[in-house]
Image (cartoon, rainbow, N blue to C red; front, side):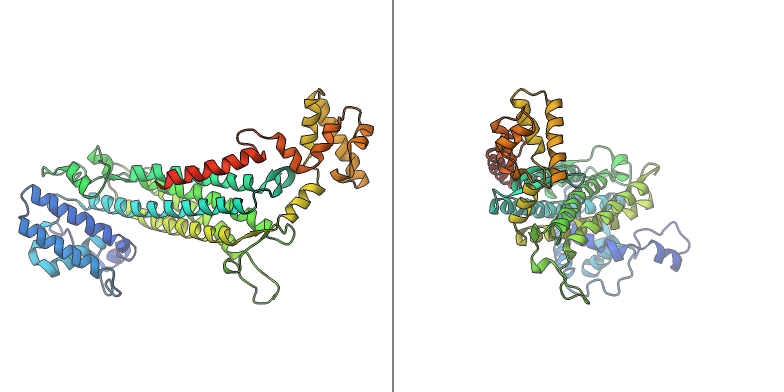
Length: 460
């Protein structure tokens, strides 16, 4: 069936129907479409279009459709234009001509908008739950090895020693911002468009606030023309999803490196790795590589809808049918990647001796030495040069920081004090960084406790 046609002498061509049909992907909106239509039936009763009995008959029929839509084969053989026409057709099978009343005062434009918003609201809530579970897993991972020391890197070169927990808290902060972005996107999603009509507002005096309450929206849209062509809320979600995937991709890259034989820091769980069809010794980090690869896909979804919306004239244009597949894909990939990342984190095991050895053998303590000199009165620029010369001498002679002591440091440069020898141990040098946001052990312990408290608040 069609929701239009009186204006036309002939029906659409087979090619056009095949080209423009969207049921094969927008059928995912069926439960949202049914819920929105039930609320609209109640609104039609309030303005006198439906009797209480008619409204009850429609709502019951929609409940039956909702249950049937969850069974295999429900969509089999359906040739409807989209999910909205399928619902109306199947509703007619149950209630006859009464089904024709359900579209009174409602445009498919606003129907599409409310369906997407209802569906996307649920997807955002799912993503938020999965993200908080990943954040919890990161904190648990940090608590398993709270004193582990690892080299921090810049330019992928060993830079300064940090606590493993401090490193994990960095990703906690990234995902906390992602959680905030998704929450903000949800706020923009959670606005009710019904009553806007095709673009000029409905000709029936619907109580839009009552409709919003019925569908658990926090408010109503403010302009009927704007809402007809608005997909900003979808772009907001896609941007938040892309940024979250960016952070997941960075975590994946780190852990692919750290679990390699060259680093040897991490052992990934058997359940999140795969083997080779040829090389028996391989244990490949496929889960992380897939997460890393899926970022490009989600960013492509954002780019796709951005380009679709560029230059569209007011108000609705059929181009906007192209909003759904990027949204569906991004939501699927984000939620799947969050779930996968949580399992990777939960099953990974740190080998603290390997990163500790890397920190002790390298000169990640050079900054600590320079700052120790500065605290004893040496101007920092000069202290930087002295520490640099010490590193150069050590590289030439094959010395590690532990090969130096207070006496040999003093012999190398009279500016060195006995206290400077203490920071040759990476764990000791970190104790000078007890500043908010720093890797000092006391602060990191406090930061972990604070992160756990913040996570509890998020979940409330």
